[in-house]
Length: 251
Ligand code: BJW
Ligand code: ZN
Image (cartoon, rainbow, N blue to C red; front, side):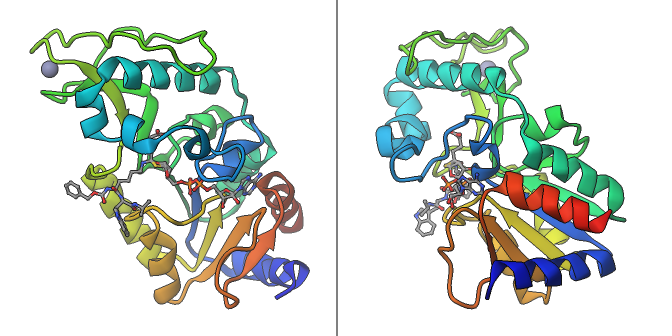
């Protein structure tokens, strides 16, 4: 279906909606200069091996490598600014009656744009916790000026002397239970779900749009690529184009 037709129908659905879910992935932050994971040339996983950097086994094997890489990522996020798509999400939360924002992103650009309540399914780069006892780390988190994160010793836990790790969800790890429950509940309850800048390839997060659609919600993808099945409705183009357009049409 043509993007303009999908757009017009989506505006009508949003006007009538009781509950809207905004589900975001790395693509919404791409225009803030934060790399996605799976884009062919620029995605992090095209340059770095997730098995060496984003699993608990990787941290056990080489904690300095993993900690240094995440310090570098934290530095990049710290320098980035929310873009027009993040700002439009805030406006949608203000102009629609009930909006739940769910993100897979570990950056804080939704919050810095002004979104007060965000469900983070994959954790947050700005936080860290003990690998052994899970207690939050309250010290200052290091940044890294190295181009791709030189190895760095992780700090130690004050309580058990375990190594401190980033508070993000790695492969083979469970997502935060309470957040998953809230997200799945919102997916089952909403009438419209906007799935923005995600490849939808990582589970269980990818169940969220599927679940909403199964329950009869209007599911629309906003993505620079139209990758899904032919029955999928995709507004093809950058999130920073389509989201402000939606805001403008709803005003
Ligand atoms: C734009 C744009 C613009 C660009 N505008 N759009 C086989 C089948 C099914 C599942 C599995 C399987 N084998 C293993 C699994 C499970 C596994 C999984 O799903 N793997 C798949 C990859 C196959 N899942 C897990 O391991 C999860 N845990 C789990 O299952 O636990 C079970 C368990 C239970 C109980 C006890 C113990 C265990 C955990 C998954 C954790 C994911 N973590 C990461 C890293 C976070 C930390 C970090 O940042 O380093 O999360 S991986 C990475 O992928 C990150 C993201 O949140 C996630 C999703 O990526 P996202 O956001 O979709 O980004 P991309 O790059 O994929 O897509 C970007 C999109 O944007 C593209 O479509 C572009 O076109 C688009 N775009 N610019 C609009 N301007
Ligand atoms: Zn500890």
